[in-house]
Image (cartoon, rainbow, N blue to C red; front, side):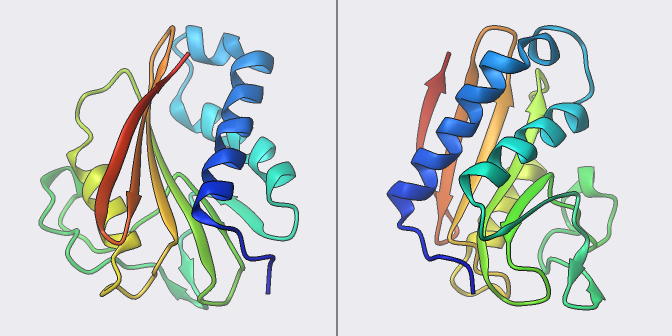
Length: 160
């Protein structure tokens, strides 16, 4: 099992990765580059912050099965399916050890389904039980961060 981190430590490590992203890859943030490109670079920096965990983009497995999230198919943006592909996860592959789930959006206000996914992924009643969820609204000059725990949004912050 990977090292167990406190909520505060997870948040601090994620923010360090975001600062590195802003410093090293500002081009990706300023130009109209697809959010998957940004997610990939952020995942690389997160791996350094969580060296004993797996950091994956668009990971679609729960064990050997396709990852499904009960309660998400009603979300019209999601296409009437329970299959999900979180933008970035920090987890231990093929176990139920799930630390952090991240959804990103680039200058797009259509984020209700991503918010719903984070609520479900972090819910105490759900099957995934991620310790924390993070929604990142990517902007040209700043990022808006929304943190989730136990199925609820806990706070918001701006990151320049």
